[in-house]
Length: 491
Image (cartoon, rainbow, N blue to C red; front, side):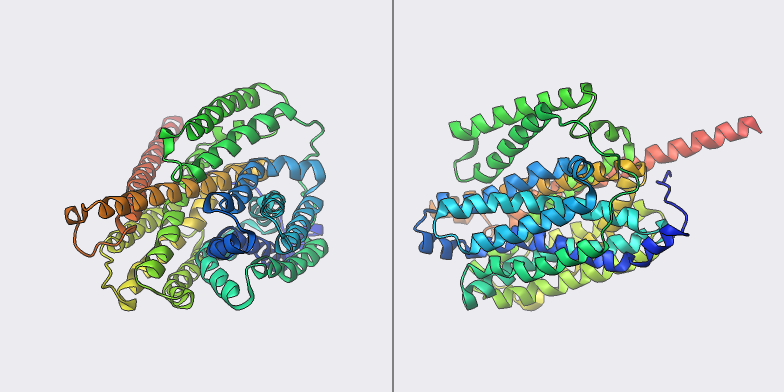
């Protein structure tokens, strides 16, 4: 299996590697900041509605605006990093995130809040994928698994604990503080990044701006994300608005792919998807997003609306699974390279599927003890998947293409998450509507809205992931067999 070669540890590189763990903590802090903010806002929506005098459909743009800006930035982070310089771009993105957080907290109208949330999304979109690219370059190859484990803890724990933390802050201090809390954390991350983050040794400065590619990408990805965000509320393709979003998105993205493959200086180098490992990893990333965000979305709703748990109790239910995920990732980081990563991914998918099966048996009579093991299994499964999946996806790329690879990987994870949430929300609301119409006897007594929606959303994705792992293993085995026969013929 090919791997991207890193420089030998010596001379100037030794000085750079000396601060690698400080750099890992810096980029992880920035990534946690972004991921927390993606999920922490949702629980404060009712308070914002009352304070700003907005309807549910209007206030939804507080989340939609941020996510749309975020996904537009993700695939072009590699180009922006090359254009501005990695150190300046990363630190500037943190600064934009911090400043916009202040203005979000001070917003006295819905228009102002949505505007600053869009600006915040433009800053936050850079943090995740640029962080991965920085870690890949700043760590020796033999320690990259450890670096990804440190980073992965934030990736998994952030979305899990965000709603609980947001509920506590909103109840205790008011909704503006879910934005103000970003300021001291962001200032610390900014100071550390200016002190320790350096420009890439491998990226060449981007000389030209692909304006056509930028326009097509922003239109295609933006309308796709808006469609996923608003589709459930507008009854999907029964709505002319949603249909229009779908058509505009499809036409724009097809034109974008054609343009990027034919232009000399693309804003997103899609040719890197010729790497089979990256292509498979990007697909896996999308499926992982569906699985993770579908469960993250449904479970807190189920616990607080049907079980009448408080935000604090919900946090205690979710915390063991998050800790299990963190522990598993830390273990995987130390064992990277010692066994076939595909076996870890296969084991992780199987354990995650077991967790989904147990989730399907949650009822309104389930107690705290009933949630413990399913959530532990979910955390362990995700932990077994994330680190080796990232390693496999990026290992085939030259160092100069790593930022592009991380951007595409995280874009698919985010879009997959939006799909997972949309599917779960649609099934959950459809089930609730059927019960209101008197069709409750067609389901099992005690089944909570959302539990089976979660499984319907996640299990097909898990099946596809299992098939993809098996197919990749078969292709790799065939290649190894062909290589062995070739060597035998030469001998």
